[in-house]
Figure (cartoon, one colour):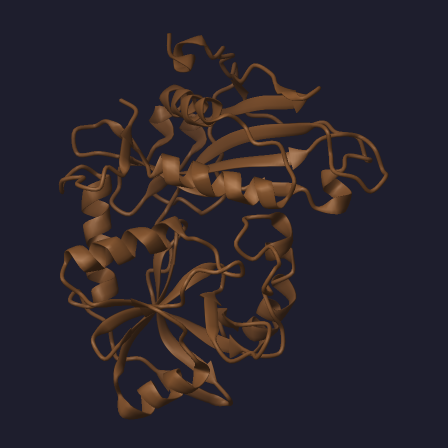
Length: 355
């Protein structure tokens, strides 16, 4: 018998679906009625269960609150053209989750708990999946060190939770970014490739400074020389230079983005040249001066693509050409949408159909 059939479900007695304004969704505002919860203690994972979404109760000495053992994932589910629900690239997200947890010395939930538990949760809250183009049910699996002990140590107890919520499309309009050369997001040998909380908290201050200067986000550079582009905000950075799709190569300071991987694969399918290589600040400046750069965008689960209009480099704002439906990032985003909604064939077997 599949685990899905045996996961206990306790229905929320106070459902809030009718309180959601699906015509005016805001990212992060609405949370679905249920969540999956599974605890780890005494060296084993306990029974996973779907319960009503509710606040957590924890000791002030909970280790995650002090020493940073907390890891999360970001995923999405979509309504397909036939009405079924599709969880996109679930196994690749699990694999990345495992790598992040290993780096943070945290217990790894068995694959069947992650996969089957998520499928059960989506099955219970499938009415929460919006059906407007570009919208989705955002899925947030996360684990935190739940042991109550204030000494510095690797936790022996963890809580695994998955909650979801309907979200709109993001970044409908191109954004302005600034190349950051004073602060760093991640360094070689660090946790930049992991989706752990500290990576995000540490980026807030320089991002705030950039916003005060009129920019929406940062283009992060490497920690050693501040010479090479690494990420765009909290997304992977992509450029179209000389007609080729160029993106920095994966490393221990760059997140292995699922959307990044998907877009690179689709670009190759569509016949575009793809290069995974270092992109220097000098190369970007030269490309602007020679007018050989035609697109720049961030790639990530939340936004899918975030087109960039302006890149600030060494005191100068460089402007990208105006985008249209023929722009590569729009073609890739549209093709990804067609696959996730079942309009185009899923030749790479990325979709996981719930029902």
